[in-house]
Length: 396
Ligand code: PLP
Image (cartoon, rainbow, N blue to C red):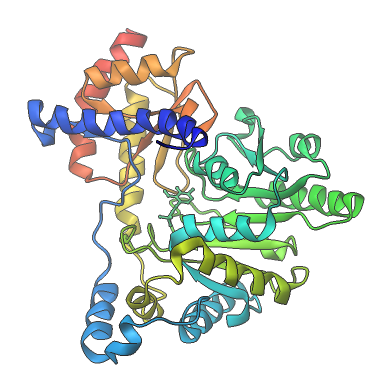
């Protein structure tokens, strides 16, 4: 017997699972090389050499008791210090180890932050289209999600005026995801400054902090000449959720962190509570060997020009087939406008051409589909004919 509260999650996840299974089935029928699976954001590139060497070093040369043992719940002091110093070097900030907790990826980081902040009935605001797990994770802590509608005209920037309307005294968190999954947009400084202004006013009016959780697993994956604004510079009550899943291609190794801005309210109290939240989440601590390895290669990155080429090639193929898409500025995704209102119809038609995509309704933004381009460039090239056929169906 399962909890009633699990039933909607099962129903929701079965759509994605079905697509995954469908992909495997199709690969058997047509051959894996003839199926163009743009559905999941599983990084296709190998982790960089520096990371693999660091893993070997930690495993072979360091004290096994340290490498494989329990540790403080917040993570290794040396790793947290290295992360803080790396942030300070890059962004001119003043983080110390006392602002950092190592986590089991960004997913765990956001859960720990939510567990620390939310009481039942509290609210978070997200901007559509948004990463679907945000609402699922908030529901773990009996918090509600308020969705700000998509701001299509602005290239899917978050809308500060709409945010203002969504705020009330129950709102404790606003989530920003930059570069964005699923749109590939990078938010402008102007927009983020306006959001910071709106939230500062609301904090004054409601008399309590409203935290920005800035979810940045794609921070390094940038393909255009546009800055990734460092939100702690604009707004004090900011908590960064980071992950190396994408920038080092290690989603299975599970490492990320949360970093509370040193300028945030009651940092010490927050960190004490978040450290306990990390422990009682069941994670206990982030994987030890991965912490020690990442600490040794904090400036390493995957081959970002490879993804840039993928972004450009897929954009070209899809737009030449007649579709309209948002130029991907960062992250792993091409956000394509559906020529029919019900984008699930387009997803089904794409499947007939052996193209697997995710409907925008999975991100609270029907009328679009998401194509993930963190796959082999050859697959993208080979998909051109299928996209051309798909385009013909709609545009003649
Ligand atoms: N946030 C966003 C926007 C993501 O796209 C993902 C993963 O795809 C995550 C968080 C979770 O990342 P992690 O693997 O670090 O838990």
